[in-house]
Each structure stands twice: as structure tokens, then as C-alpha cells.
Length: 269
Ligand code: GLP
Image: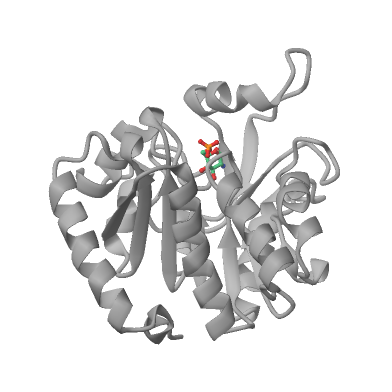
């Protein structure tokens, strides 16, 4: 795992945007896996800014979101489809028909998972998957004890996740307890993974993910099985990492290297 510690949230957003920019300028028909939550908001703002100010081009890009709630329609204010439209898709030149979010309202929700997996395969697989992490270690909505080889399916949310995400729902509003999510196996099939985490509330999760034992009890630890993961965290989220000094040392050496080579040289399919 490559661990990059950014000094603050803005630097973190810029570093993540650099990786995406490099990906989509090198391969304009890239397939991106995208995440919701508050963590990637800064990244999406930065991508919108680069599109507006520098013409960053999304016209050939396709996207697959990690997950969606079950039981609320796509146009519901709290659906992940609405989140993506409002925070990214409506502000860039992406072809909306090339943006995919799992179907949380399908007639038979059990069919929606395999259908989504098929669509990802037909698109050629995910080139770069953006991820955040839940305080209980979930990625997408793969809650603790999710199979490390799981594919897109329905999951019941834990009390911890329901509580963490309750801030997005008003007190009298229906908050879904089920979601459809890419599996851990689906995520591990992507060619590259960009994991983002910010704030002290994620410090324990980041330590378990990077330095803990691989366990279905802490789904994000499965990323240790992937050969190309970049974890970008701010100082607060990095605060409990045992080898923090080492990651910073590597980062410094890498910055020197980047000055010599173009990062796009490292992108391949
Ligand atoms: C939700 C999403 C995850 C996200 C997590 C963390 O549960 N399904 O994909 O990573 O929230 O959210 P936040 O970034 O708001 O902490």
C-alpha cells in the first residue's frame, strides 16, 4: 500500500484530483468507480474547478458508483444518485448515460446485483476506484463480516453506520436500513484503488485498514490484498499510524521522483 499523508484537506483533495486527472487525460475512456459520503466532496469540487477553469474533459469517461440505498427512489434528496448529480455530474461534461449507480428500487432487488456486475464487466472493468471508509471499517456498504470475495448485493447496515449517516436525514424522515453495494471482491477487481480518509474520527479505521490484520471483521483491511492501492489521508486521520514517519519518508522520496518522471507513465490497463 502506498500511504500519502497530506498536510490538510485541501492538499488532500488536490492530490486525489491529480491522480484522477492523470488517469482520464492518459486514458480518456477511463472507467471510474466513485464513492459518496462527505470525504470525497473536496475532490469533486476540485474536479469541477479543473473542468471549468482548465477544460478537464470527462466526455469519454464512464462511472460506476459503489452503492445505493434500497427503498428510496433515485430522485429522492438523500439517494446516492442525487448526491452524485448534485456534487459532480451536473457540473462536468460527462455523458449522463455513462454514469451508473446501483438500482435500489429494482422490481426484484436480488437481480440488481448481478445486473450491475455485468454492466461493469461490459464496460471493461473499473480502472480507478475511489473509496472512503466508515468508522466501522466498511467500504461501499460492505459491513463487518462481509465476505472478502463478495460481489454486488444487498446488505443490512450496522447500527454504527445508521448512526453515522443519520446526519443526512431529518428526525422524521425514513432512513433506509438496507443498501445495494459493490462487493469487496468487486472492489478488489478494479485496476487501481484510491482510498481517502480525513479527520480524527477515521484515525482508528485507517490504522486497522493499513496496519491491522486482514479480516472480514474489518472490511477495509481487504485492500491489503490489492497490488495497487493509494491511501491518501490528512494528518488527523494518520495520527494513529504506527509507521507514520516511514510513510512520510517514502512520500518525500517519491515527490523527488515525480519531478523526474511524468506520473502518467505509471498508468496502464
Ligand atoms: C457511507 C458510504 C461509504 C463512505 C462512508 C463514509 O456509508 N456508503 O462509501 O465511505 O459513508 O462516509 P464519510 O465520508 O461521510 O465519512
